[in-house]
Length: 331
Image (cartoon, rainbow, N blue to C red):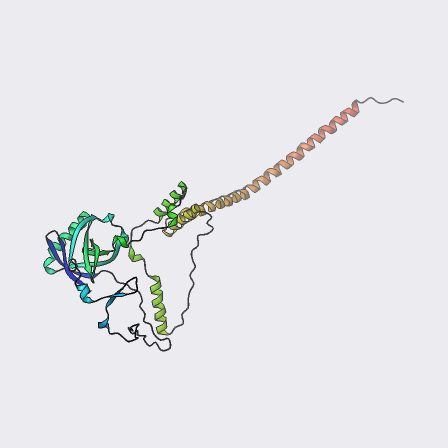
């Protein structure tokens, strides 16, 4: 890494010589504008609007356009005379709790490396920041622009985080903020359950720039002269969600399943299979019981026949006795 700024950090009467390094870099795929037919690079010329003549870079200044349309020309000498006490000194104005700083103010991160003669006070400030869980609020001028910034610790290194000014934060003026939204307790409970089911420790290494990877694959394929085949991926659907509660409940179940926690869906499946097993067991029992039932029926059938025969015999005997007892008719 190359340092882009050199100065000192001052808190109280302690001064620490440091070098400033950009802590982040964009890995976006960059392109040049070229002619489609042969890939020839397109160049732009700096042309003055009034006469169409090309202007050398050394003759270019900064212009501030007035509401009347007139232009005030500012040269490098004008900027050099501006008072910038923080041009080479990072002066700590205050130490504030880290949690009180809204992340919306953060702009860009820089590493601060101590000079060889300033390692001890550097480590002293680093440890004090880390142990107190505070951030140093400072002013610094980078590339001729004074900025508000904080000093915090990351991986044993003091990080200077430039910030935007309070008047550069826009007010969220949206109509829905004045609406009275009625939230049901069940919806709030389900929303909290969804957050808990998706909670975890922050690990940025598990996230990747899929678009950049796909773009690099396209470029690689162009180099090799292969045909590009676009594969359409299936998009996740939320199913037939009819209200907010259904959406929250479905989201909780999906989050649990994706984390391998076995949400309610597997339980339902097990509950569905259980009756099936019971039904199969019932059928098996019925089959085993079938011969016994047949035997019982077969046993009952002769019993019924024997009972009928006995009844018939008694009836015949009664009729015979009645005939004998009846008086004979005389001529």
